[in-house]
Amino acid sequence: MDTVPYEQLRPPAALSDAIECFWRLLLPSVVAPDEIISAEHRAEILFQFAGHSQILPQASERPFECASSWLMRPFAQALHVRQVGVSSSAMIGVRFTPGGWAAFQHTDTTDKQAYSFMPLNDFYPPHAVRQLEAQLYHELHTPQWAYPLVTFFLGRKVEQLYFERIVYATAQLQHRLISVSALADEVNLSERQFGRVFRQQVGLSPKQYARIGRANRVLSTSALDVSTMTLEQLALRYGYHDAPHLVHEFQTLVGMSPLAYFTGSYDLIDQKFRKHDQFLQ
Image (cartoon, rainbow, N blue to C red; front, side, top):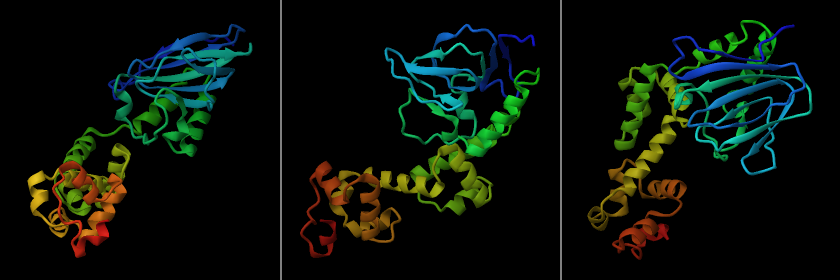
């Protein structure tokens, strides 16, 4: 079968702002590709259907362990791709525009090193990845080889209207005390839909984000206010049920008690030895 060794296709207009191109590499010969791939501030997804490659960090001979489909994240270090053996090679890739990866729904909350190639299962449900791989394999040698990718990313592109609503919602949760249901009403989404879209775009639920935002507001309390308020007053000011609730949240999110934080920051709290504040110690 005659095949084009390397081919690029431009995405449809609805994806062109976020995806630079889809590409396919079919090498029936025994020539083993050996190249340097650089992220250049963009993400790239690769699917390998034939052959076997080693992915090595620059200046290293220790390869990453890769799945059959993986993602090179934005701002990753350049990587050395070396094919192992002399078998034919069949790969399909998605090259995003700078920042284009953020335009699609995915779960990117990992704390793994940014330079590594990472399995696509870390960002999408495994069943969705397996289905996409099967569709691509079925179309691998046909003119329609990029169609499964177009369908996949069209279905996951974040609607601009939703994006603007979530940007607004994050700002509100950072700066004021508001319930998730009330905020969902403000952005004209049902509470369930709001939670789903928020998690897809932010990586946290609205309640988790609200907890962090409230703790940050406590951390920003001025030295003058801290010196004139009891812990109970501070808790009520920022919407905590009571002082123990504030202490628990502070310990969980900040890693220390309010007393330890504000004493270390301002050296102004003189309530340490008051009987009703003994739970702080």
